[in-house]
Image (cartoon, rainbow, N blue to C red; front, side):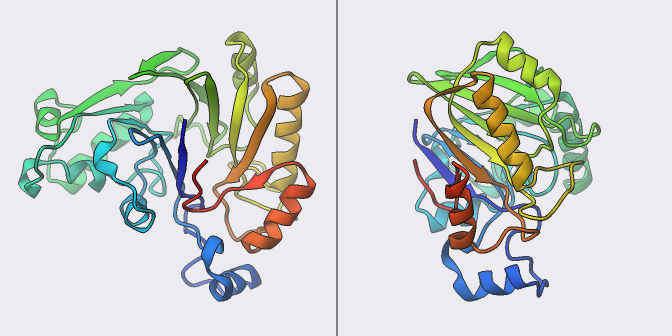
Length: 283
């Protein structure tokens, strides 16, 4: 599988638009990999995780053709991960030509909130109405955690996240061509239900992409991971035999809170056995 990071930042992007903290100021001065769009991942050229607000600008910047995308795994409905205008752009009213089919996978809660957004923003658009979906060439699929399902030639499992019960957020494993990746954003410490799911499915990850919203010195544990918690979660994966040999570990969803500019953060990560993803990274 080929993975392209369309964004690796947290909700307000990085640097924050109006912030003058040291990390944001240094990011503005350094630029490059220290600039982070809101998080999204492209798998090969046909599967995207999260239809976020920055995917179009990222696709132009990194020369990615999103017209080849056939599948979307949506983690949750927060605005930094889901921009419904990406679906509206498929409507005939916008005069798109030869729009390919898109299969959209999400939890029941995410689908309900997406439908409400559609109704509010497009004066009564019925996102879950099969007739309206036909106009978008869109198929909606409700995802149940811990129940494996096929997405094209991919094998996918959704796992519960620890990111506020009202969001019903999901973490995803995606397997194809003898490789399995784990995409784990947004989450605080991984819930025990998910650890049990890892073992029940006898899964081993070749690549782990995990939330690193808060960096060094931030001790929050209610919605995202900080650097120390990130390291602990990866250590538990290794100790419990969930990582494949030579598994690659990458951090994403990076905020200015405790996370310095990319070169400094990368040095810290390297000392602790992982890597810091950056926008445009392709592996």
